[in-house]
Length: 312
Length: 256
Image (cartoon, rainbow over all chains, first blue to last red; front, side, top):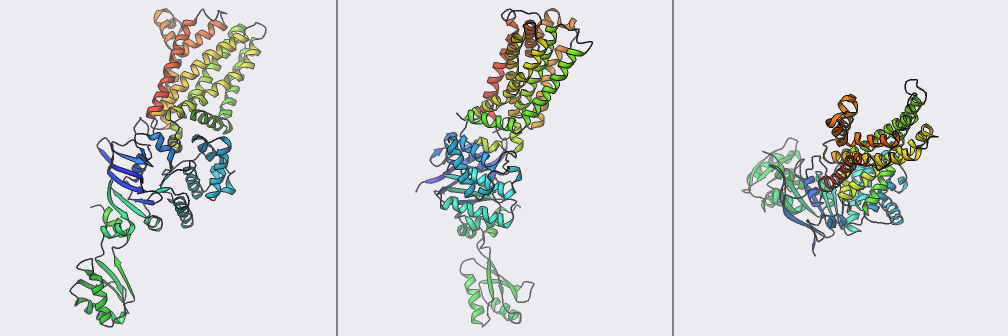
């Protein structure tokens, strides 16, 4: 299966400032690729370069088979929800979508039909005739996503689509994102700094930091490669805590074992990531100490993200 | 033909959004005051009828072109500030066509101003057979000046870092173009004064209208005075379209 997005060594500089360096990755058809990074990591610059708003200083990329030196071709096959997109307050949602459909060459009647269908799809069908000035932030984001779909794109770029939304609004947007990939078969590049969005929605993840790719792969792969678990928190009954610490102290693979604040809560450090957690657990079970909970630290995407993006 | 879609939408925004109507209403109020003063004021109503028409027409041309300038100066920087430019740039419509569409929409204000001017010209010039010449010369010169100023506004708007900068700079240049009209008449005589009047598209254009309306000259007699308005219109239109097509971006200063 050919890649829907293929970037090779893309770089964007503003004078001596490197906003994006050596960006190389691929996204397959129909997948949702999450792009994570702290503020200033280069996420928005990456999207603006890949969507032809900015030209790269170096490197090349292809979107749905169109090369970066054919920007008009690329713009025909992509849909974009830009970060902090503005909306014309005096237009209705339907007028706004109709205008954009017309810009993609649709006839008047085709544009009207597409606008109505998209508004219905993103749950704004009832408000199609309302001025955008009366829309909530969540409704505007959904309108922006509808606009991004107006040309039936093969690749959709969404820059912080859930920013500033309440949990219900976030859930609604993420469900729309899944439908874009699932029902329409479009590739989605979801740019966010909310890890939960990525864990919940994306099949693969790309972490940017300081304009460079810090990691990429499936969520599990990235979590593993960035911060392989070397410590764990476990809970036993408070009266068993001292026995548990003693039992764990006798295991060679456990470097440290100590109480972790609350009664019955312990924290252990392992000599190695691989296999040593099992030895610690076995020692407790062999000693007849029931383990009420056990959680490896560093196995989550958030740990990986922090490990890769922490500044010195 | 993306420019047609852009023009149509810009016209809807301008006129149905109310901005064009408000500006046109203000324009017609101003013209009403001028016409009233010309027709009734003791100092002004000694003007010969042709001069009254000329004065009204010159005000209409100047203010109508100013309106086109204001809309042009908001065209790109305004969208940039409202955050709506990026989604426009993401469409397959070229930046050249976007610029063209916006420029054409800006000119609609001048055409509306001209239509509003016709009744005043007719009222002040009735009976001396100059209404036709006045309206047509106003259409010709006003269109050249409106094209020049709207293009200039768009050009500034492409590069301006903010809408405020764009509007301020455009108005400053417009005021500078009107400075020669405030010079004492002695300074407007002689070869230097004549050259200044001819080089400045605003003064040259209005001079041409004056020759036709006030002096009753034939259209072909003073054609040389149309050179700088025509040249300014052509050069600045080309410059605005090229700059828009090449440098229109999310940040001012043409950075990409």
